[in-house]
Length: 452
Image (tube, rainbow, N blue to C red; front, side):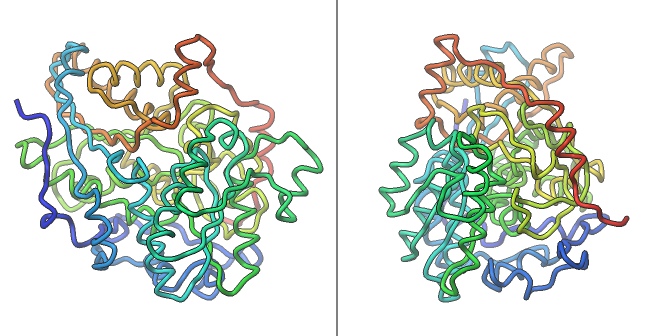
């Protein structure tokens, strides 16, 4: 029984896949918050180099991966696809479970797929410094790594609760040469305004984004980099699904169900968009399942509306499933999923009926992750535990129904820097976090008013 499916480096995809070419209806425009008119390249130029802005709005189906980016990718790509034989036996399911493992990258997650690309385009444009935010630290680690490779200074605002929970992740960022500070911080006007109201604020990705954007626009040699949500970020991640397609063909399989965890939407889009696009072009259409945390459920509880991407309301307005930019999620351990909004393209696909969404609590996801680790040997990141949980739910459904379906999920990163969370789980100290319904209602009531 073959367990892993490996592609030779020569078969690594040479193009990223852009789902915007195949959608039956275009995604709603990004709006300028002042004029409520669609933004143009000049509006985004203070934040991003022009080549990334071009990718953000492109409707070309394929966008070539530059050779220098592919040269770096070779350090870990193509990433392996595994058949989870032992997990299947443990569950007693007739289903076949496959997982794409992105934890083989130097940063331990899928995030370098876009970090390397963004660093390349910024260096090419003459940028000297990148500023960003990070939750659990996966993105901050990836951009620190990419910055080191391309000679860029990297400064990172890490959400305070994750900054405190994951000191070793911060140490890795510093090893790569980046500077990491807890957010909200006293280094920006917005950070100081938050701390004045709430000195012990746990932070949020929305706040950290505001701080990073504030710094980015102050210097000509500085740009902002985002690890999820935006179209060009999701584009760069599609190499995951493209490789998985080839590897499943090697296994003579095709998925009936594709599962991914969702916070901002990048790893989910990476595994799912190529399969959605294949279906839109007339191919087989697997069920696509997005799994999110019940404590920050943008797809299942959020409103599909125009909103700011950050708490300080400095970004353009995008139409997405949102809990409101003023919403602060509880401090559960899957810090990479603690974002108030879902990627506009993922949200648009949900509106078009191209994917399903479910939400699970923290403890049941850790339970799934431990079961996976004890059978497959890999300890998943807390974020990835949500995808593991989603895949197990599907496999047990197949068991009940007697259906031998093929399930594919993205194991987007390992949990080696999240052992404090696992220690709490084993000690019985890990609890399900719940958001404040009143706070959610207030955040949704404060959404910007945009005429239909």
